[in-house]
Amino acid sequence: MSGPRHLLDTNAVIALLRGHAGLLQELRGADWIGVSVITRLELLSFSQLGPRDGETILVFLHRVAVIGLDPKAERYLDRITAIRAATGIKLPDAIIAATVVEHDASLVTADRQLLDLAQQVAELRVFAVPPSG
Image 1 (cartoon, rainbow, N blue to C red):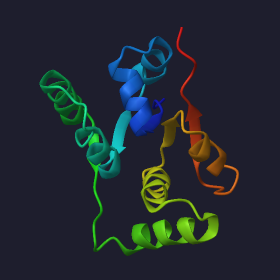
Image 2: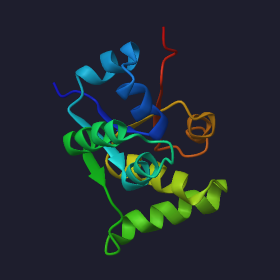
Image 3: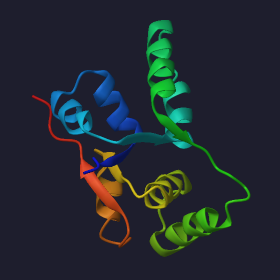
Image 4: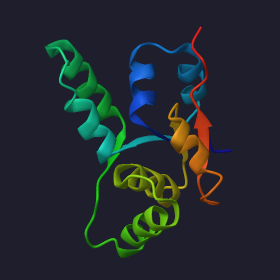
């Protein structure tokens, strides 16, 4: 039996790096963990990162799949466009949602807008970051 596949949104990565016990437990049995290039960019461009924070993020990013935008992957690009056109969400969120669908994964997020997006995009599976505690 294979384990789950998860793509983490920026807020999920931050929670994970802060030691969120519920999220650590959920991800422990995963077969695949990835992030969108959007998440990579958001994490590394945060203006208040200290040198150790940046190092920690880079170590994490080297341990997961970072999924980029391939200009030749027309089906993927068409899915991004379709999700954005159908829902009106911001382009970065549409990219993340399409990446989840294309990689047959669940989106791990605490973002209410992305959690609600699953009601509009039938193929999108989401996993809400459990409350910490």
